[in-house]
Structure formats: C-alpha cells, structure tokens
Image (cartoon, rainbow, N blue to C red; front, side, top):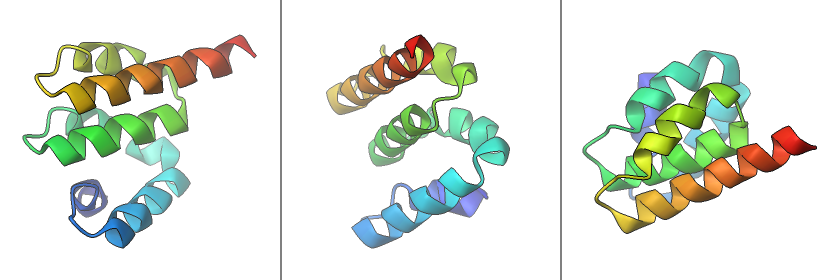
Length: 93
C-alpha cells in the first residue's frame, strides 16, 4: 500500500490517478497510511493525499487535515480546506 501512497506524488498524471483509484477501493485499509502521508516532504504527495482524504470522507481525518491548514504550502492548505468542507457537507446530509 505504501507504494500507492508514494505514487500520489508521481509526475505522471495517469500514475497518480491510478494510485488514487486503487486507494479509494482500499479505503478502510488506507486511512492511517494516508494520514501519515500528510506529513510527506513532497508537496505533491501532501496535496493529492489531502484531496483523496476529502473524497474518502472518513471523520477520522478531520483533525489531521485541520493540522495541514498550517502547512507552509498554499496549495496544500487550500486542498485541505476543500477536503474538510467536503467532509462537513457529507456529515450534514
């Protein structure tokens, strides 16, 4: 599973999309590795991970995503904010 998380930072969009699709299918198993990936040195991994966690919508990721709102990178912060809003919207429905 770790190789799929690393693939989220690949330069090739098809590889990133494939990793995303595979991780979505493995949702229950991937939450913890994805939470760890939010601390990656790679900006791209942090962005893709925040987006994916928003798509998965598990409430366990609210606190880690909230911490990512303090990231040095603006794109990472914006993506985490969107993910949190998506999770909140699902929870209110």
